[in-house]
Length: 301
Image 1 (cartoon, rainbow, N blue to C red):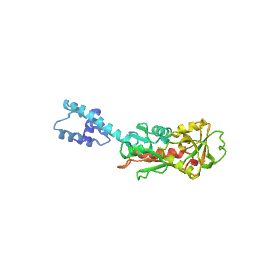
Image 2: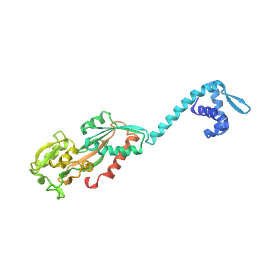
Image 3: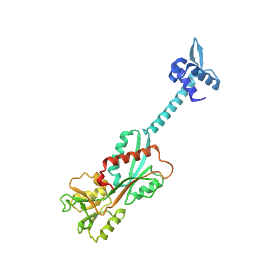
Image 4: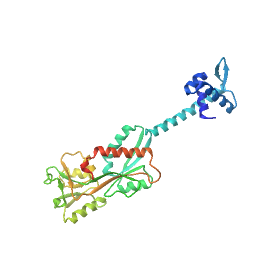
């Protein structure tokens, strides 16, 4: 037996004549007749009684029809699933993301993606960049998004965005009128810093030490969003990544360029083994396009 024979059998049952069955299958009447005859030969018993030019299904045919109907419905479901996968309407993504992009920006990216692919399931978890790398290498997620002072050296990574860190000042601060902030401007300022476990902390400290500038390091936090909140409440100044500046919704804070520039690279890590799926590739391209539309060119390298 083959699938085409079973489709012809079902069509004859439903259409009650070979002519209508042939129309349903978009084939000629002789072709439909041959399919039924070959099916009867293969299974070893008659399926229809020929009465006055019409085909009357036998009792055995109706018993077989119940099973054929269930099987063909399953085949059609598989075909629809394949079509959904091909058109990116079906599938799942497990995404691990660093906080700088994962707390606010990535949910917006995902919302826009799911609006176009409503059958896709997405799981988003937020971890440090080093933990994201471990998840990707261990094949425990489909995509990883990291932010590091330098791009993760992997042939399976795609740079999403190269930005510079910005100086966050409370509104009304004495430096708000300066277009560019330099280390000497922040001498003696209360400075809100990342903890030493964050990679960019060492780079920032090195720059200020090279310029002989001392700051008042009174407050630390590992995330840029609460850092901006602290700045807005007048607790000090800070250097934050550009995406956090784009996402911040407070009104009593000013972001200024900082020199020497400190580059922050946002990259998407693809599967370590095997090619990326159509869904993974589509999400990468969607994220790149979303960034192009929503991140100001002035914040980029």
